[in-house]
Length: 124
Picture 1 (spheres, rainbow, N blue to C red):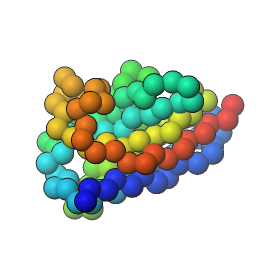
Picture 2: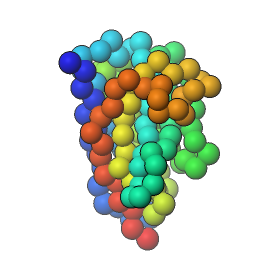
Picture 3: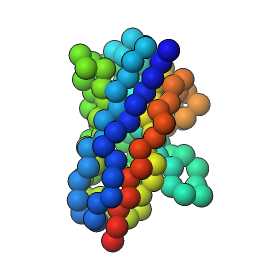
């Protein structure tokens, strides 16, 4: 049974940093593209960042230069370091695993497994 468990969310002030983690089990982690998506209240889920099995990385324009995605294949964990947080970053952040390539990494339909999400609140 595949499980993705996110952690690290919380309430912070604008300009602060947070580090999200996603621990994976039940799958051959190193073979999967891992991604982070987020969903704000009343809005659709949106792509944040992805890292392929080979380490290729892509970010959404809204977080580029502020967020960093990384993975530790030995620990079956993917991370999202979020710096210079803004109120508009407030959302539930979801971890996902799938076979998406670089051109489809933004597409949530290309991911097979999802975590339960972790809430990030950024106050102004």
